[in-house]
Length: 362
Image (cartoon, rainbow, N blue to C red; front, top):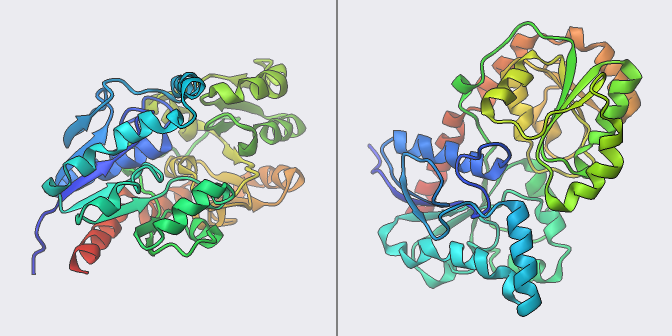
């Protein structure tokens, strides 16, 4: 029996436009999901920022993306005036799909707990995909209370690790890994003689460790990524003194085209994270291009990398150096095939469709 096409609201964040020009993992996932749902004939409304580009119907309250740095400044100014005002821009954005709830079959919330607050005010079901580290958020008393209040809502996890780290018994319907449009990530069987680190520049993502590995092995390291205002001091003190433009290079934020160019030509992506990261999009992007990944055994890493097949999962810098010396053992075609089989947009959307229909049936 052919299933009916759905009217779906996708709630993104107000911080970064969809798709992001440079950094913005959540917004990129929302874009990929939205575009494929539209392609499949669903009627999708995207709640994002006015400068977003989408095949879906676009609704917004902020014409331009607030930006993570701009948002921090705005919140600081508001907080000086009102103790509770730090939430106002986020709530102002999040309420929109719920005001129009009767236009949809289902609302898919990607905007943390802000999309939870209004979910009980409508009979239209809300599915929440939390893109951050819930276990860390639970350490905050108020956030723990929020998760407890909305634990019976519909939830999906983005990795088994994310689901297993959570103490609150959230109603997880499924673990759905992110997927990418494989055709936008050209494969390269050959590489140039450099390493790459790519992402948001913050201590827990292991840039300092990547630099140490590059120096120990005398490999060029290209660093590309965004620096939020709260991480500027870390970059200034810990990272910038190492940038000599001979062995260590920093290129700033890069768009999709440049990102793909750097990934497909890299010898390896270094991923020495020190936190339980629920998912790392750049790991699947790198492998799609044929670039093997060497990563610390944290978070979702074991779910994304096939050890000794598409990269190496290691415990410290010493093991990372050793694995880098054995990088020739990795067949770059295996990296590509691993992503084609497990981490495509099509597979991701197949799983979300199943969840949507399951919720509506119940």
